[in-house]
Length: 316
Image (cartoon, rainbow, N blue to C red; front, side, top):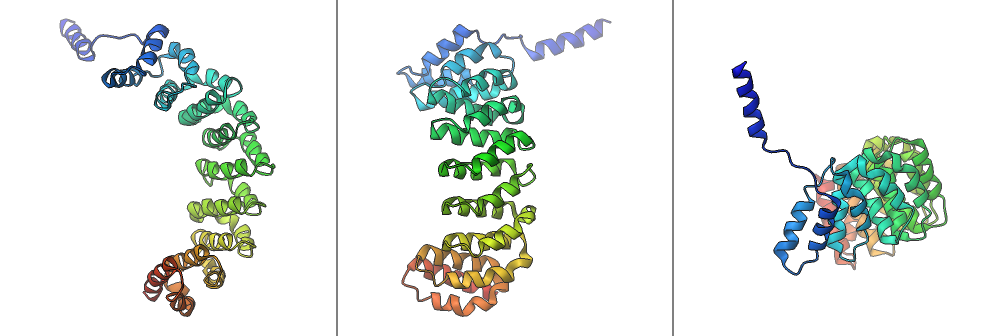
């Protein structure tokens, strides 16, 4: 028995004394120190706030109240602290998403996004924030919603509905946010396929880029990408061709003619992009060698450089 107590005592000593989390007043003091003129004081405050974690729910109301701090560094420190608190902070953050000033709403969305899947109870508040009057809040809400609830049908339905709405900037934000959900998220590929037909070329191009990043996992979007090869915008056609090659390398034959034609586009960025993608395709784009060699004399230096690199890769 004596040896048992000795072992227990050793564990207690090794663990050190139990420390209670900061009180609300202590958190307010730390927040005040973030603005001290002495950098060492500010750094110490950041370190102490960095110790706030899941068991420090008492700090949540104070931290939420500081989300709109005028100082960017202070806002990010507070946001990170709330994210570390995790689930205990979700109800207060969900409430902050729908009320208060724009900074508070935006940072609350960011904190929820950083919490991740544990913030799923906040999904309805984030879905409502897709209609927030402030552009940044809408964008941050879309990012958070896609990240915390990629398998939630209601969440994806809200994003898909907004993807058909009149706000082009929000539609673009949603396309980028869908990368957070991943290709296996409920309705993600269908949403990106829809975005490939968006009336804004930037949205269509972003959708193609997301599908390219997903690679073979985005095979279900192949028909939409093939349709996008005929897009009225040259950059979108090149983007769709690049994505098609990444998603299904058996469709290279459909992409190469589009890229060859793009080498004649009036926009040098489109021509350069086409040359880059042909280089990525490699030997399977051998039929494009005459076009690439002609592009070695292009008036744009960037096109010439991309064409030279592509010729080398295709000849390999």
